[in-house]
Length: 119
Image 1 (cartoon, rainbow, N blue to C red):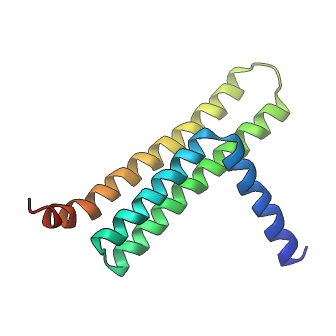
Image 2: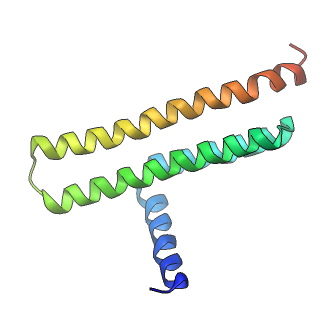
């Protein structure tokens, strides 16, 4: 498979993710807010690296969760306790990652925010 073809498939996955998953759109909006705040606060290169990695991790886990849900729906269209478990654990992974992202954001943004606001 050519690189351009693989890139096209990945792009289709991103479009699907953002069109169909409300939480992915919320994570994208949060990412945009974080990027603006990071620019405003003038965070360091290392802090930018941490922020970019954290935001991309949240979006990646959201994408993996969506893939899990689609796979479970395909393989088990009827309600089954294991299907529920797979979906719940996938959602838990997103929640854990999002909580960690908030904590990382607070660690990075609170000191310069306090300084900028004179607190």
